[in-house]
Image (cartoon, rainbow, N blue to C red; front, side, top):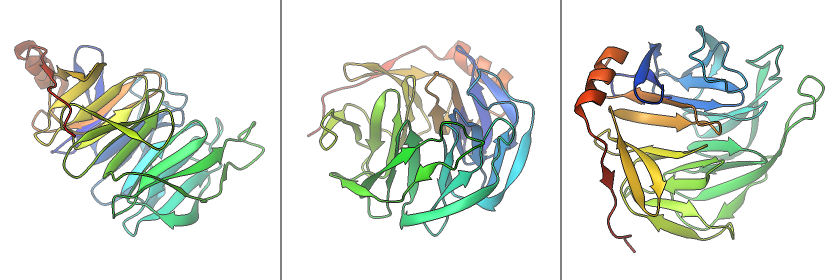
Amino acid sequence: WGINRNQDIFRWLGSTWQHIPGKAIQVSVGQSGVWVVDAANDIYYRVDTRGDPNVAGSKWVNVPGKLKWIASGKDIVVGVNAANDIFFRDGISNKAPTGTKWVKINGKLSQIDIFDNEVVGTNPNGNIFRSPYTAPVVPEAAAPKLSGTWAQIPGGLSKISKGKSGVWGVNSADNIYNLNDDGKSWTQIAGGLVQVASGGAVWGVNRAGGIYKYLGDNKWQKMPGALTNVDVSDDGNVWGINANQTSSDLWEECHRRQSSSLFGGSIRR
């Protein structure tokens, strides 16, 4: 899924984009469904998207609270507010897909993501942190365990994403990095992005709103359309928020006119 400069919401169908009614500035798609925050920091959940099915969902429902960034994980949603306070949504289950309450935890982050057994995030100074997470075996029977005990990862990033494709991030100079298997060093990847999303694949957007999908070996495929924010689930479902187009018909026209291309180049050191 993704979002554009008009705050329109889109879902990738494999060759074109489907326009989803509503307005938002950031989207997250994961096992707890599709969640967005809008320009007023209001929070919305897309009904019928829990479990990460490849569907558009049926409607948006408002979830009480205010957040500027949100991330959908397995039986948990995490987020940060305008004061950089950190929260997780308690009580998420099949019976209650929007959960029951927000729980504040220790720390300050400006952006956050969650995958598997770990939460990662960056603070306003660009420092990178991680915290362990334990999901309940039966969501209805126990609360998730997110301690708010943070360990710093070396490096500096403005945005970070963790998913099936690993931990990826970008810094304030739009440089792209992938965390190495040692968990503390980074490999710089060719290209320039302002936001990157790691899931079943790696997608990102650049400062001009261009959309890219990583092919490996420092090569990116230019995708049709223009977005300011994109997210990809671990099942490969992509949603986004775009730049000029406001309907799926216009995205299809853009796709017909725009050929696939690559951007790469040497890795900057």
